Image (cartoon, rainbow, N blue to C red; front, top):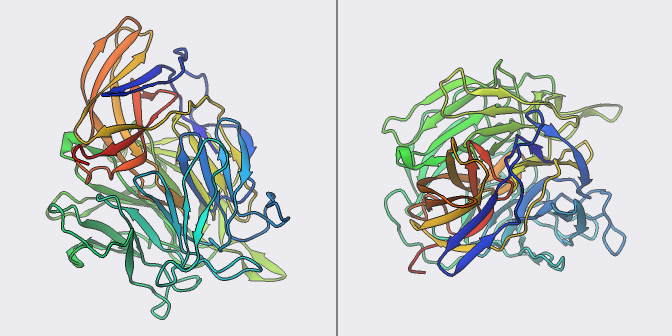
Length: 512
């Protein structure tokens, strides 16, 4: 779906050496709509268990093997589709291995990697050791490429993350499907793609990952395979599947030397459909030597919520959407004659969180949706500044969206630490403050936003022009702030409101 939080229209251009992007001109006018307006305009064809923005106007949707409205050419139910944000239509994609509860990440060239899954279902092969690749296109001809036994071990509910050196790390999960992990099926291993056999140490901290499971958290060096720091237990409930909370790396900002701060919100305490979800958030500043967790209410007033999606917005705020007030993540429970949903009392009201405000003043309540989004739903930001929300089991997969224009832009190459000039056409000639950021939307599934990351960019200068302004912004200093490659979007905001089109950038090192 898309949720619009109020957008400002202005012309965006980006100028770099030998590169020029010019979006179609649009008029300057703020949309007259309440905060969080929803509009249903399309269907995804398949349940949106997993989703990723693979091109500025294209979304890949992945379900598991199950009955869906979309059909393949041979008459079977499809379980993957590509949704076009311009036409609000989908086309069927073809998969041959079961993607149930799999993971994904992007390579620097923009190719989506997708791994793991579940057992054979009918003519569809087992997916637990599969690697799948999808490279987006604009001519509607691209499709999945699969390698059925690429991985050396089975993974279900695994995690993938994009690394500063451009590789993708794939780790964890179980060797088969389960409600809760056990020692017998736990898979505490990891692997890389591409797997070149050589892992070279980088600068201090560049090989470190924040990792969390249940209530435990640590910083881990994946090169030396050592624990750098054991962090205090995460307060509140367990916040990982099936007691699913939301975890997010807050925006990295040059004004505080890119301090890494993590926030968890929601979760649940036990595997009972009637059990009350967690109504707290826990936040930690990893840049501090003696980092401790700060707790706060989840919303104002506090709202218990399990299976919330946390979406980074261009203004640095965090949108929480979807989920339920009771229960846990999973399929129906009970007996064949008395079926119970694992989660009860769905929450249709999104919250907006401002990490820069004082504790107690960080929450804004937005307008409610009309559709229940719980298990196997997702949400992510699109280049036009609205939020795409879709999916849910056992609910239907229509895609509500706020209809706006998105221009299909070709990614431009920019270098780390490079000053880039952005030209905007804007009628306002006074009282305008510009901000800028880069956002990688990552891969979304089960309330996990794998590799989602935002970096606030420094605005070096703003110079008036005949039609608007020329704005100089500096790219992140290195790969540790934002991993290299495509599928990263540059957003420009005027007085806190994003332009109606972000530009895709291809972020590279100057010597590569």
